[in-house]
Every structure is written in structure tokens, then in C-alpha cells.
Length: 527
Image 1 (tube, rainbow, N blue to C red):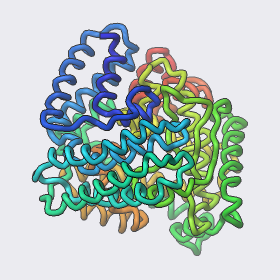
Image 2 (image 1 turned 90 degrees about the horizontal axis):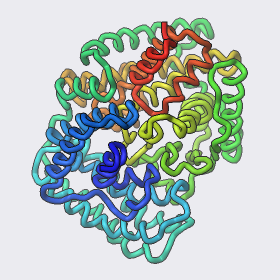
Image 3 (image 1 turned 60 degrees about the vertical axis):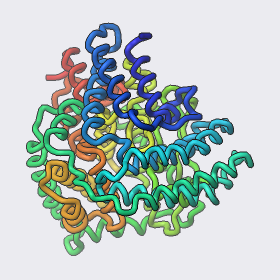
């Protein structure tokens, strides 16, 4: 034993080496996760040993000890009940991002041998994963996502990967073999029986209690979120009447898509302009101290990624590798045939605030100095989501909170843009309803999709994928709204200035919100 955090990370990177690449750890870039007979049982054996070690440890930072314990207990329950290795979309995600992670700017200079090794490993990895699944039932949404990802990755490997600036001829043959393996894997999923995607009330309660530190039963946030969803609908109508009594709020928000740069060439500068404006507004109004030392480079997405980005969990902003963060990170400006995809309102709220400037970017920069080692890396974006789901209450809670916080910077948003923000709040409350109702067995997948489309107003093209994501990660989507509500509650109890509160909140890095609350309480900073 070299130390609890080191031992935990060694365990984590052994079983999930693609996570290691995204986090910036060395020595794992040539591997894909180990699969084969007995792999799930072997991982569970290691988890039991690490849980004993966690209970005995007295030297790790308290946040690290708490996060490792909760992560292990929830992973233990997951691996017993529905192992990730039995999810075909997990297999396609790990195989695909095993290669793509090494082609992103954060991985430069390009490690040709590691990329070739991962390409060569894909056929065996997918075959072993398919053997583990066998003929057991799998939720149809998970199978559909795996098929879609397989098709996109086969196309990428056959055609688009060669457009990458670091392309090497030595990758050509293993890339074609990997493309064929994805196609075989997709075909092999035909005929798998369907399974209930709900994790059940017991596991949902475990996730909420252990990972997110919520003492509530799942039924409690359901009632609160329903009330918030209804309240936001009423507020949207009232706000819209105050702006234009003859135009419904939906039409007023839709009209925002027509306010955008005059040409596609101007789009990246629009992102940069509003990023800078958000930092200045937040600082001048005493809301939060924006990070200015860690670079954020807005670039057009390279052609090699154009066709693979949509079907995969390919983010325009991905948290930098905390173990090797360098001097800055890249923010992709996604290509779009329509300028409406880069409307000023969306660039301001989503790109400049939620993800850039004072949102995730400042949050990630601050996390580099967090007292907890895991607090520096927990919000790493991996193949399917955050490395540590327990950090979501603070990570996504902050990014959604800061969207609304910028309303306190007078003049930053227009009145109609505040309507858009209110619709975001309503959308997050809607996601709580879908997330928890689905996993408690109250709503079917079809009922969740109907609610998103007909009541919550989600874009039709987004609905199915959103519900599938909800089904794979119980309680994760609910944490956006729960995190915002938790931050607002802490702010009401804070005894200092607004800026000091938000700077203190970010100083702890990527940890569950309840751990930050305990720190503030112990320091006498809360009323």
C-alpha cells in the first residue's frame, strides 16, 4: 500500500485505462479495459479490499477518503446488479474514446504507438465484451445507442481519422480492422431481449445518499421538482407578458435564434467576445473572481471530427486532464450549416457562461489547487460522463447556478434572454421528474419521452437520447437542479460577500456539494 489515493487510482486505472488518459495519467494509453471470464468478480474482490483500506486510513484528506468510500460502495452495488461491462454502449464508448482521447489537443504530442495499440485492441475488446453480454436482456435504448456509435466510429476509422493532423500510415490497417469490428459488434446485438432500464428505488436511494450526500428519499425531490416545474411555467408566462403581451414565451425564445453573427467566419470571435464580456461583468459586479491565468482557446472543430461528434459523447468543452493540465484547454466551436446554431443568446448563456469564462472553465482552473487530490480530477469528462458522478451536485450545480448569477450583472442579458434562462431552470426541473420517475418504475421510457416532448418542450431530435442517458446514469441528470438548489440554500446562509462565497465554493475543487457545506459550517461561515 502506497497511500489510499494512490491505491484507489491504481485500481481505477487498471480497470478503466481510458479514464487515465482523460485524466492525464501516464502509462495506460496503450490499453483498453480488461475483459474476459471472471473480470467482474476480480474487480469486486479489489473493491472489497479497498473498502477495508478506506475504513482504516487516517492520512488521506477527508474529502478523498469520503469520495473513495462512496465511489467504491456505489460501484460495488452497480457491479453486482448491472455491471457496466454488460452495457454495449459502454463497450463502444470505451473502444471509441480509447482512440479519440489520444487525438484531442490535450494529448499532443501524438503518441503513435499508443494509438496503434488501442486500434489493434478494439476487435478483441468488442468480442470479449459481446461474450460477456451473452444472451442476457439489455435495455433497448442502450443497444440502440451502441449501434449508432458503432456506425459513427466505423465511418470515422475508415475515412475521417486520416484527416487528423497527426495521421500515420501505420494506423491504416488496424483502423480498418477496428471499423470492421464495430460493424460486426453492431450486427451481433440483433435479437437481444429487452430489459427494464430502471435501477429500482433501493439503488436510486443508495446513489442519492452515498454519491450525492442527499438525506432525502427519492420521493421528496420529485414533489419539489414538480412544484418548481409548474412555478417556472407560470413565471415564463408572466415574464413574457411584461416583454410583449401579444407573443407567447415560446415564440419570444424562438426569435432569439435569429440574433447571431452575420457570417460563419465571425462565429469564433463571437464566442471569444462574450467569454471576455462575462469575465469582466462577473468581476466588476463582485459576483465571482474569474480565472485569467489558465488559457481557453476557441477553435473551429477540425474536419476529422465533424461526423463522429454528433452520435458520440463528444463535448465542445472537455475538462482539462487534471494530472497534466498544461497551460490551457481547447473549446471547440462546432460547425453548423445554420447561423441560428450560434445565436447570441446561446453563445452567451451556454458557451461563454456555463462552460467557458466563469463556468466550468474557472471551476476547473480553481480545482487544480484544491486541497483534495480527487477534488482536482473528479470532474474529468470521460467516455460517457464525469469520472466521479458524486461531484455533479457542485460541478453542474455551479455551471447552472452561474448562468442565473450573471443576471445580477446588470445589462449582461437582455430581458428576452432571461426568458431563455427561466426555460433552462424549467428544463432542469423536468429532468428531475424524468430521472427519478424512470428509475423508481413510475414512468416507462415512452412516458419519459412523451413528457420531454409534449410538456417540457425538449427539441424532438434530442428527446430519445436524453432519456437513454437518464436510464444509464441514475440520479445524474437530477443533480443539475438539485445542485443549483443546494448552492442557493448555502448562499442564503453565507455570512460574507457574494464574491467571497463563490470563490470559497470553487476553492474545494470537484467534490460533492455536501462536503463543501460541511467545510463552511465547520469554519463558522454559515448562519
